[in-house]
Length: 118
Image (cartoon, rainbow, N blue to C red; front, side, top):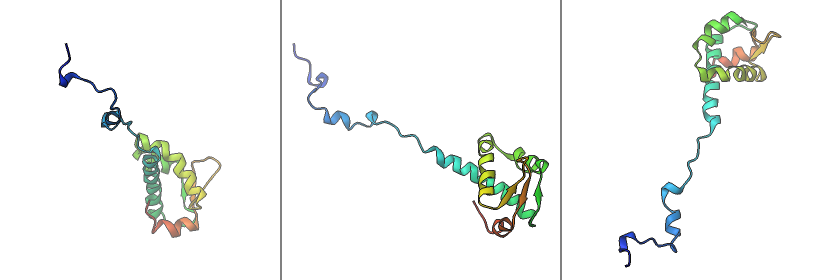
């Protein structure tokens, strides 16, 4: 007895099988895009605080960081906090003292935080 035409499987025609959407692998979105946004949000927090205290040499103490930055962070932004501080330091906007939590606003920071947006 022959199977009915609707139940037949054509083994020789595999090109049609490869075109179906359920055989394609999903690509994950790049991780760096989200991490970049969180880092820029943290930089924006520092920028807005220094815009209010816009003098060369103004010191952001550990208490200021905890009160104005850390308490407002989400868990994903917390991972980007250290990276954001290092980048602001590397770009010359702030100086970091030896304790790692005392930040000093530089002349470049005073000039650029006014017009900066991340």
